[in-house]
Image (cartoon, rainbow, N blue to C red):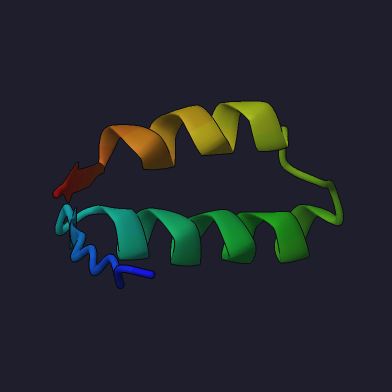
Length: 51
């Protein structure tokens, strides 16, 4: 059987990590949980996947 190799390149925008750190900080300060659907939508805007 043939072996298939696939390489993906994922690039993360510069602002994604600071956004997540800020989100965690505010969540801990307020004791509230973030809306994960909204967080996912924002983070996906900062990701680029290329084959």
